Image (cartoon, rainbow, N blue to C red; front, side, top):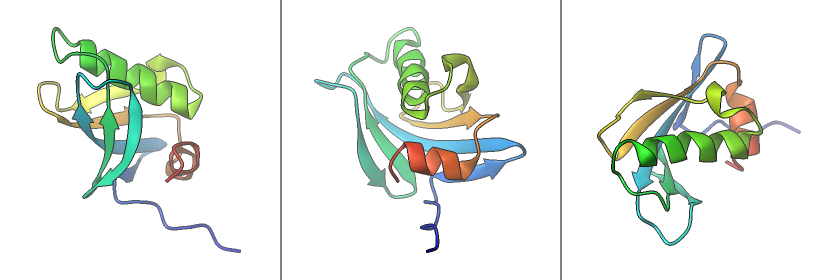
Length: 101
């Protein structure tokens, strides 16, 4: 049995992965909502103030991946709803499997 293809929101990056995310802040609860185009749509309870949503996003994804929050870094999009996360020690197939994609 073959593995399903990796969604376009997950990209290999050296020894790890990059993840394109579309963030919806100030949601009633934090959750993954599926794919939106070529990005993973994530609703976060945190407001987009003083980097709170960025920190909450990294912690939320780290928790879903089962890694420490320091292994999920914001690579691009600090002031945008469209963000790119870097997971330097997590392979793309692991990201796909643990996020249920």
